[in-house]
Length: 142
Length: 201
Image (cartoon, rainbow over all chains, first blue to last red):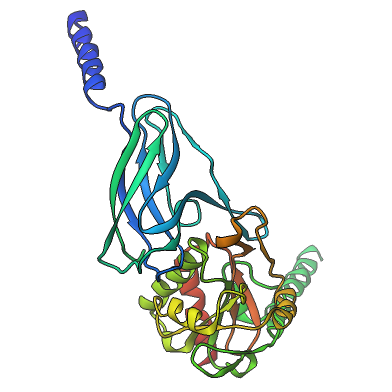
């Protein structure tokens, strides 16, 4: 391992792996939506991992709801919960962003039909650089 | 002399300890969340409920009441909180039948009793909804120190209500003993329910 050529080979290997590994596209995993009645509101939660370049999540769309907004619930020291619409969410390269209850969520307002456990809905996330990413989101209880 | 004086001091400390323990109930000392120092009877109210009855809080003696102020159009924190309570009651090592979850709507304009009922059906039969018109609701909010107001920045058609997201815990003796903020570990809530229900039986 002390051999300079061996070290160089390892470094080169790591660099190549680095090039092949992370794509420039954001990755979405673990998406789910909460069950709710028609006309009511629901939320989608997911794990997002940004690609290799800086990007921003601009908005989301789904035919399952009249309106879809990026939101963040903020709870202050007195326990007051307020939801704030997010115009854009900045993403550093490879930065993970977790959408989870009590934090970031994709809010579905005015559901077009009831969301029942076992169903799924289609969601489109729009990024500034990566463009649109389509996600099939299962409906389930948490 | 020194030794004798130490003995007196130790005895006083012991006596003081006994007196302190006697003055507070053992259950209150062990509770999680934000326990009230000197638990008083929970502020009472009577409101129409989703099961067709009239719900009076002070009639619920003998069971634990978990009281939550929320609204059905709330997409995140309300269903997340109620979902957590459902989880606690499902894996209960205590008599979950003696726990009543009550959600008071802070949005009576949109939450009729049928809407509340349909919403709470997602969580289980132990989840009861109650509703009062705004003049009935306001003094209850004040008594529990709960904030609830329409967010003026939200879309008027799908308005949001900023509100205190805590679960208030009323023990089988009808006292308001603690409250849980959203980040309270479920294990803490489970332990508290065991403690409160053991103490009462």
